[in-house]
Image 1 (tube, helix red, strand yellow):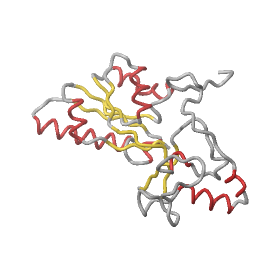
Image 2: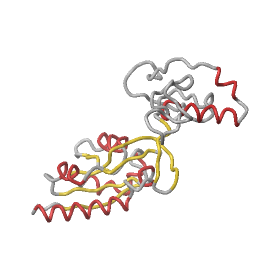
Image 3: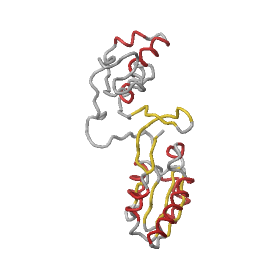
Image 4: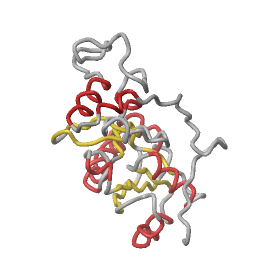
Length: 220
């Protein structure tokens, strides 16, 4: 899932304070799971902004709404009229949703209410941790489902570095060495021979052409 963190209220206020009509727009998929960007958070943020406007003596109408995902056209059907009538939209989606809306509604300012942080999972309620950097060249088949790109501080692809001590990373005693996790996991599933297989230097441009990557599904 995509994990995000809501921006400080003062930073958000500076973006929207010149407008008279702002829709605070939630996204109810990834960032709702981390309690930063769903409809509930949009409602709370709109209330905070109304109070801020009152404190500043500024007249701004804040309306809150949201959809399932801000990165697909079909979900905008029910809120189309609301969005197009807005002077500005404050999006609680990840950076993808913000850019999607900015393209879809080219004449309306779309502002980000969140900082998109990483692709991660839920360790326990309220605890999210990075697990993927979407590098486009997945090595999890060799590394027993533990990603050395996102979970190693140095992104080392072939075995632990010299800073690993007692299964911990040199950056902190609280951070597991990714390669120790990989070795333990390979051993547990009977694939320890994978440790001897070398990976080439990471090529961060999957399609080798530069610019934004894309994926086109044939037949659509």
